[in-house]
Image (cartoon, rainbow, N blue to C red; front, side, top):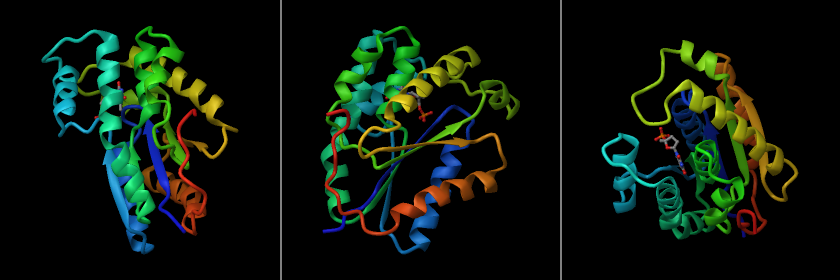
Length: 212
Ligand code: 2DT
């Protein structure tokens, strides 16, 4: 039986991730696909509220503790993701486990340690990484107020995303695409759509698990 495709959009700050995610959902709906938009962190759950307070610097947490909360926030929704995919709904997800590794490893935690709690989550079929040099991102009106929204951090995060991308490329069942997000909005959305079009047909292979 055909299931929905699981599409993850990752990217650096100011890469246009939120806008592009919304455009993609609209295009999928127009193409007649039932689609659900998810975003991590999901700040609405009990765990999400702790994450939100941390990101807004209203609370302090050990680096490992917050890392595990980000992962738990995904596990909270894992069975719902699987259910929606099985029902034929396409999922577009703004950030996922890759952000989890990229940000925490950039703070100095080991890459392997960071990856461990997310092993076995439902695996995306396609990851679109919106890439933009942090210098260029800064020109787009500066970073926001939250923790991590600083050029030095973004540079490190971009490097770790590069490593994850290298390791994911060729990984069974996951297509990792780097999208040059430094271009204008329309060019980027066309590029994204050309990569998604291949997933509009039937997705018949079973849902895989990440890094299993
Ligand atoms: P948004 O600005 O997209 O709301 O992200 N982050 C995110 C982590 O450190 N670990 C994670 O697992 C995830 C999903 C990235 C808020 C910030 O949270 C970071 C930016």
